[in-house]
Image 1 (cartoon, rainbow, N blue to C red):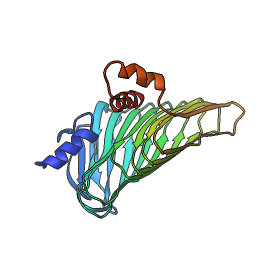
Image 2: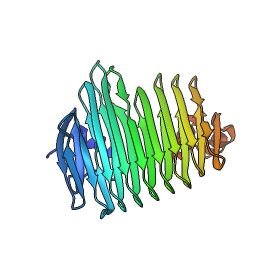
Image 3: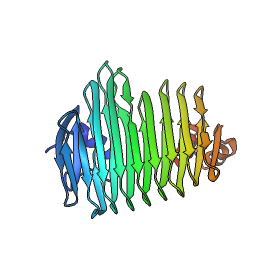
Image 4: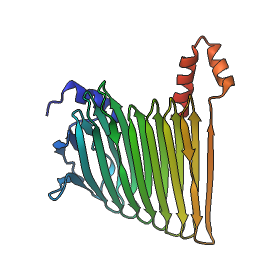
Length: 306
Protein backbone atom coordinates (compact mmCIF):
# COMPACT_ATOMS: atom_id res chain seq x y z
CA UNK A 1 0.00 0.00 0.00
CA UNK A 2 1.06 3.62 -0.50
CA UNK A 3 2.15 5.36 2.72
CA UNK A 4 1.83 9.09 3.44
CA UNK A 5 4.85 11.27 4.17
CA UNK A 6 4.33 11.37 7.95
CA UNK A 7 4.26 7.59 8.14
CA UNK A 8 7.30 7.22 5.89
CA UNK A 9 9.31 9.79 7.87
CA UNK A 10 8.54 8.15 11.23
CA UNK A 11 9.37 4.70 9.82
CA UNK A 12 12.81 5.93 8.81
CA UNK A 13 13.49 6.83 12.45
CA UNK A 14 12.16 3.74 14.23
CA UNK A 15 13.28 1.09 11.72
CA UNK A 16 17.04 1.43 11.37
CA UNK A 17 17.16 -1.62 9.07
CA UNK A 18 14.79 0.00 6.59
CA UNK A 19 11.10 -0.95 6.43
CA UNK A 20 10.00 -2.48 3.14
CA UNK A 21 6.75 -4.12 2.11
CA UNK A 22 8.42 -7.39 1.25
CA UNK A 23 9.33 -10.57 3.09
CA UNK A 24 7.90 -10.93 6.60
CA UNK A 25 6.39 -7.65 7.80
CA UNK A 26 3.35 -6.13 9.50
CA UNK A 27 2.55 -2.42 9.77
CA UNK A 28 0.08 -1.17 12.37
CA UNK A 29 -1.23 2.37 11.84
CA UNK A 30 -3.52 4.18 14.31
CA UNK A 31 -4.77 0.98 15.89
CA UNK A 32 -5.31 -0.93 12.65
CA UNK A 33 -3.24 -3.59 10.90
CA UNK A 34 -2.96 -2.00 7.46
CA UNK A 35 -0.64 -4.39 5.62
CA UNK A 36 1.45 -7.50 6.17
CA UNK A 37 3.35 -10.17 4.32
CA UNK A 38 4.88 -13.60 4.89
CA UNK A 39 8.18 -15.07 3.82
CA UNK A 40 8.96 -18.69 3.00
CA UNK A 41 9.84 -19.49 6.62
CA UNK A 42 7.92 -16.84 8.59
CA UNK A 43 4.15 -16.64 8.83
CA UNK A 44 2.15 -13.77 10.38
CA UNK A 45 -1.43 -14.43 11.49
CA UNK A 46 -3.90 -11.84 12.76
CA UNK A 47 -5.40 -12.68 16.15
CA UNK A 48 -9.14 -13.25 16.23
CA UNK A 49 -9.84 -12.67 19.95
CA UNK A 50 -7.89 -9.43 20.50
CA UNK A 51 -5.79 -6.92 18.56
CA UNK A 52 -2.39 -8.20 17.51
CA UNK A 53 -0.60 -10.90 15.57
CA UNK A 54 1.00 -14.32 16.01
CA UNK A 55 4.39 -14.64 14.33
CA UNK A 56 5.46 -18.21 13.56
CA UNK A 57 9.17 -18.54 12.76
CA UNK A 58 10.31 -21.85 11.31
CA UNK A 59 13.48 -23.60 12.41
CA UNK A 60 14.64 -23.30 8.79
CA UNK A 61 14.83 -19.51 9.15
CA UNK A 62 18.45 -18.42 8.73
CA UNK A 63 19.46 -14.76 8.79
CA UNK A 64 15.99 -13.43 7.97
CA UNK A 65 14.33 -10.26 9.28
CA UNK A 66 10.82 -9.51 10.52
CA UNK A 67 9.62 -5.88 10.57
CA UNK A 68 6.63 -5.03 12.81
CA UNK A 69 6.51 -1.23 13.32
CA UNK A 70 3.63 0.71 14.87
CA UNK A 71 2.76 4.31 13.97
CA UNK A 72 0.34 6.57 15.86
CA UNK A 73 -0.54 9.81 14.06
CA UNK A 74 -3.96 10.24 15.65
CA UNK A 75 -4.96 10.79 19.27
CA UNK A 76 -6.19 7.85 21.33
CA UNK A 77 -5.02 4.64 22.96
CA UNK A 78 -3.82 1.58 21.05
CA UNK A 79 -3.19 -1.74 22.83
CA UNK A 80 -1.75 -4.64 20.87
CA UNK A 81 -0.74 -8.21 21.75
CA UNK A 82 1.98 -9.85 19.66
CA UNK A 83 3.18 -13.41 20.27
CA UNK A 84 6.30 -14.89 18.68
CA UNK A 85 6.74 -18.65 18.33
CA UNK A 86 10.34 -19.39 17.36
CA UNK A 87 11.20 -22.99 16.54
CA UNK A 88 14.41 -24.89 17.38
CA UNK A 89 17.43 -23.75 15.38
CA UNK A 90 15.97 -20.54 13.97
CA UNK A 91 18.20 -17.51 13.34
CA UNK A 92 16.18 -14.30 13.04
CA UNK A 93 16.26 -10.55 13.62
CA UNK A 94 13.01 -8.86 14.65
CA UNK A 95 12.74 -5.08 14.23
CA UNK A 96 9.88 -3.52 16.15
CA UNK A 97 9.27 -0.10 17.66
CA UNK A 98 6.65 2.59 17.85
CA UNK A 99 6.60 6.12 16.55
CA UNK A 100 4.09 8.79 17.58
CA UNK A 101 3.34 11.89 15.54
CA UNK A 102 1.17 14.00 17.82
CA UNK A 103 -0.50 17.22 16.72
CA UNK A 104 -3.55 17.25 19.01
CA UNK A 105 -4.31 18.26 22.59
CA UNK A 106 -5.29 14.80 23.88
CA UNK A 107 -3.13 11.84 24.87
CA UNK A 108 -1.67 9.53 22.23
CA UNK A 109 -0.62 6.19 23.74
CA UNK A 110 0.57 2.82 22.55
CA UNK A 111 0.85 -0.24 24.80
CA UNK A 112 2.62 -3.13 23.12
CA UNK A 113 2.50 -6.49 24.92
CA UNK A 114 5.00 -8.88 23.31
CA UNK A 115 5.69 -12.50 24.26
CA UNK A 116 8.54 -14.59 22.86
CA UNK A 117 8.57 -18.38 23.05
CA UNK A 118 12.04 -19.46 21.91
CA UNK A 119 12.92 -23.09 21.23
CA UNK A 120 16.31 -24.78 21.53
CA UNK A 121 19.53 -23.75 19.72
CA UNK A 122 17.95 -20.60 18.35
CA UNK A 123 19.50 -17.16 17.84
CA UNK A 124 17.10 -14.24 18.18
CA UNK A 125 17.85 -10.51 18.00
CA UNK A 126 15.00 -8.17 18.96
CA UNK A 127 15.35 -4.45 18.28
CA UNK A 128 12.75 -2.05 19.67
CA UNK A 129 12.97 1.71 19.01
CA UNK A 130 10.64 4.30 20.52
CA UNK A 131 10.24 7.85 19.23
CA UNK A 132 7.75 10.72 19.38
CA UNK A 133 7.41 14.02 17.55
CA UNK A 134 4.83 16.70 16.77
CA UNK A 135 3.73 20.07 18.08
CA UNK A 136 0.58 18.89 19.84
CA UNK A 137 0.12 19.55 23.56
CA UNK A 138 -1.29 16.09 24.28
CA UNK A 139 1.05 13.69 26.05
CA UNK A 140 2.87 11.04 24.03
CA UNK A 141 3.01 7.78 25.98
CA UNK A 142 4.59 4.39 25.27
CA UNK A 143 4.21 1.46 27.70
CA UNK A 144 5.86 -1.72 26.37
CA UNK A 145 5.55 -5.08 28.12
CA UNK A 146 7.95 -7.81 27.01
CA UNK A 147 7.94 -11.44 28.16
CA UNK A 148 10.73 -13.70 26.91
CA UNK A 149 11.14 -17.43 27.46
CA UNK A 150 14.50 -18.62 26.13
CA UNK A 151 14.97 -22.33 25.49
CA UNK A 152 18.03 -24.52 25.99
CA UNK A 153 21.27 -23.45 24.24
CA UNK A 154 19.57 -20.43 22.69
CA UNK A 155 20.79 -16.83 22.53
CA UNK A 156 18.46 -13.84 22.86
CA UNK A 157 19.70 -10.29 22.23
CA UNK A 158 17.43 -7.40 23.24
CA UNK A 159 18.28 -3.87 22.09
CA UNK A 160 15.82 -1.21 23.17
CA UNK A 161 16.21 2.51 22.51
CA UNK A 162 14.07 5.50 23.39
CA UNK A 163 15.27 8.03 20.86
CA UNK A 164 13.44 11.20 21.94
CA UNK A 165 10.11 12.95 22.36
CA UNK A 166 8.34 10.44 24.63
CA UNK A 167 6.60 12.20 27.55
CA UNK A 168 6.03 9.11 29.66
CA UNK A 169 7.07 5.47 29.46
CA UNK A 170 6.71 2.50 31.78
CA UNK A 171 8.66 -0.53 30.57
CA UNK A 172 8.06 -3.99 31.99
CA UNK A 173 10.34 -6.88 31.04
CA UNK A 174 10.20 -10.46 32.31
CA UNK A 175 12.71 -13.06 31.06
CA UNK A 176 13.29 -16.74 31.84
CA UNK A 177 16.44 -18.58 30.79
CA UNK A 178 16.71 -22.36 30.40
CA UNK A 179 19.86 -24.51 30.49
CA UNK A 180 22.83 -22.92 28.65
CA UNK A 181 20.64 -20.05 27.46
CA UNK A 182 22.27 -16.66 27.01
CA UNK A 183 20.74 -13.19 27.29
CA UNK A 184 22.27 -9.89 26.14
CA UNK A 185 20.35 -6.68 26.91
CA UNK A 186 21.28 -3.13 25.94
CA UNK A 187 18.90 -0.33 26.92
CA UNK A 188 19.47 3.28 25.79
CA UNK A 189 17.20 6.07 26.88
CA UNK A 190 17.13 9.87 27.00
CA UNK A 191 14.61 12.11 28.71
CA UNK A 192 14.25 15.90 28.65
CA UNK A 193 11.87 18.58 29.90
CA UNK A 194 9.42 17.07 32.38
CA UNK A 195 9.42 13.60 30.81
CA UNK A 196 9.37 10.46 32.96
CA UNK A 197 10.70 6.97 32.34
CA UNK A 198 10.39 3.83 34.47
CA UNK A 199 12.08 0.59 33.40
CA UNK A 200 11.64 -2.66 35.31
CA UNK A 201 13.41 -5.84 34.27
CA UNK A 202 13.19 -9.25 35.98
CA UNK A 203 15.52 -11.99 34.75
CA UNK A 204 15.14 -15.54 36.10
CA UNK A 205 18.21 -17.66 35.43
CA UNK A 206 16.59 -21.06 35.87
CA UNK A 207 18.80 -23.34 33.80
CA UNK A 208 22.24 -24.64 34.62
CA UNK A 209 24.99 -22.56 32.96
CA UNK A 210 22.55 -19.87 31.88
CA UNK A 211 23.96 -16.33 31.66
CA UNK A 212 22.77 -12.74 31.33
CA UNK A 213 24.43 -9.41 30.55
CA UNK A 214 22.29 -6.32 31.12
CA UNK A 215 23.63 -2.87 30.20
CA UNK A 216 21.69 0.36 30.65
CA UNK A 217 22.88 3.75 29.37
CA UNK A 218 20.66 6.76 30.01
CA UNK A 219 20.77 10.54 29.87
CA UNK A 220 18.49 12.75 31.97
CA UNK A 221 18.04 16.43 31.04
CA UNK A 222 15.74 19.27 32.09
CA UNK A 223 13.51 18.33 35.01
CA UNK A 224 12.93 14.79 33.77
CA UNK A 225 12.85 11.74 36.05
CA UNK A 226 14.11 8.21 35.44
CA UNK A 227 13.96 4.98 37.43
CA UNK A 228 15.76 1.83 36.28
CA UNK A 229 15.20 -1.36 38.30
CA UNK A 230 16.86 -4.47 36.86
CA UNK A 231 16.69 -7.68 38.89
CA UNK A 232 18.63 -10.89 38.26
CA UNK A 233 17.63 -14.04 40.13
CA UNK A 234 20.04 -16.98 40.06
CA UNK A 235 18.11 -20.22 40.57
CA UNK A 236 20.92 -22.50 39.37
CA UNK A 237 24.60 -22.49 38.46
CA UNK A 238 24.66 -19.30 36.40
CA UNK A 239 26.40 -16.01 35.62
CA UNK A 240 24.87 -12.54 35.41
CA UNK A 241 26.20 -9.01 35.19
CA UNK A 242 24.16 -5.79 35.49
CA UNK A 243 25.70 -2.44 34.56
CA UNK A 244 23.84 0.87 34.82
CA UNK A 245 25.52 4.10 33.63
CA UNK A 246 23.76 7.46 33.52
CA UNK A 247 24.58 11.08 32.70
CA UNK A 248 22.58 13.60 34.74
CA UNK A 249 22.12 17.20 33.60
CA UNK A 250 20.21 20.34 34.61
CA UNK A 251 17.64 19.52 37.33
CA UNK A 252 16.95 15.93 36.28
CA UNK A 253 16.54 13.05 38.73
CA UNK A 254 17.84 9.54 38.05
CA UNK A 255 17.37 6.50 40.26
CA UNK A 256 19.21 3.28 39.47
CA UNK A 257 18.27 0.26 41.60
CA UNK A 258 20.06 -2.89 40.43
CA UNK A 259 18.98 -5.94 42.41
CA UNK A 260 20.63 -9.37 42.56
CA UNK A 261 19.21 -12.45 44.23
CA UNK A 262 21.17 -15.70 44.49
CA UNK A 263 19.10 -18.80 45.26
CA UNK A 264 21.81 -21.33 44.41
CA UNK A 265 25.30 -21.74 45.84
CA UNK A 266 26.85 -21.59 42.35
CA UNK A 267 24.99 -18.48 41.19
CA UNK A 268 27.48 -15.70 40.37
CA UNK A 269 25.81 -12.32 39.93
CA UNK A 270 27.44 -8.89 39.83
CA UNK A 271 25.96 -5.40 39.59
CA UNK A 272 27.44 -1.96 38.96
CA UNK A 273 25.78 1.46 38.89
CA UNK A 274 27.17 4.93 38.18
CA UNK A 275 25.44 8.32 37.81
CA UNK A 276 27.35 11.52 37.12
CA UNK A 277 27.54 14.74 35.17
CA UNK A 278 29.43 15.27 31.92
CA UNK A 279 33.17 15.44 32.49
CA UNK A 280 34.38 19.06 32.35
CA UNK A 281 37.66 18.03 30.77
CA UNK A 282 35.79 16.45 27.85
CA UNK A 283 33.81 19.65 27.33
CA UNK A 284 36.93 21.81 27.40
CA UNK A 285 38.73 19.54 24.93
CA UNK A 286 35.87 19.60 22.45
CA UNK A 287 35.47 23.37 22.77
CA UNK A 288 39.10 23.82 21.77
CA UNK A 289 38.01 22.42 18.40
CA UNK A 290 35.65 25.36 17.98
CA UNK A 291 32.46 23.78 19.28
CA UNK A 292 29.96 25.63 21.43
CA UNK A 293 29.18 24.14 24.84
CA UNK A 294 25.85 22.83 23.52
CA UNK A 295 27.51 21.23 20.50
CA UNK A 296 30.14 19.62 22.72
CA UNK A 297 27.46 18.23 25.06
CA UNK A 298 25.58 16.78 22.09
CA UNK A 299 28.71 14.99 20.82
CA UNK A 300 29.42 13.51 24.27
CA UNK A 301 25.82 12.33 24.73
CA UNK A 302 25.66 10.81 21.24
CA UNK A 303 28.90 8.92 21.85
CA UNK A 304 27.69 7.75 25.29
CA UNK A 305 24.44 6.37 23.88
CA UNK A 306 26.02 4.54 20.93
